[in-house]
Length: 163
Image (cartoon, rainbow, N blue to C red; front, side, top):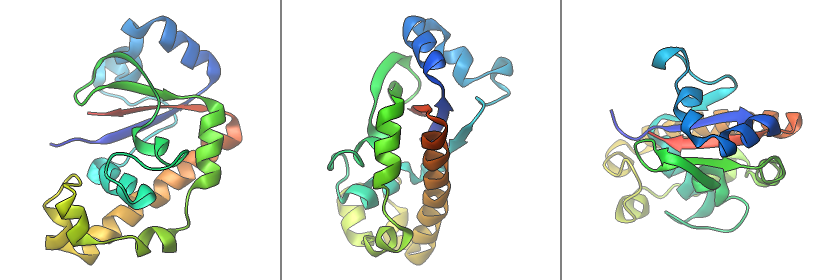
């Protein structure tokens, strides 16, 4: 299955409730007994690390606020598979949304050999799949940009997790 990046836009009240009751996080992430997904949520499949890399030109860090788009936020609760849930506050979501790069700049940063050398997950596809891997990243990046812009417009924060 692999590590999938998940994002859910939430209002400030929900953020406060989750922080006050971390034991309810699993019910939030997996409603309907695990058969559903949170409202206003997306997943970016296994593209999360590649997107982070192209946004930041770094595998794990980068400059604020873009370094927070995929791997940022305040950790709460138990491990959900690849670490605990992280929460981005609404003001940070607005900063990230305003800093997201355009798709042509995003694509221009694609360097398959460098990504493979930096062990960007899933590391085997960058050189092997070349332009198809870039198309995969760009598709999920477009979805992520639309998600961030909509969340920022509503004044939402974001819950992020990798599972």
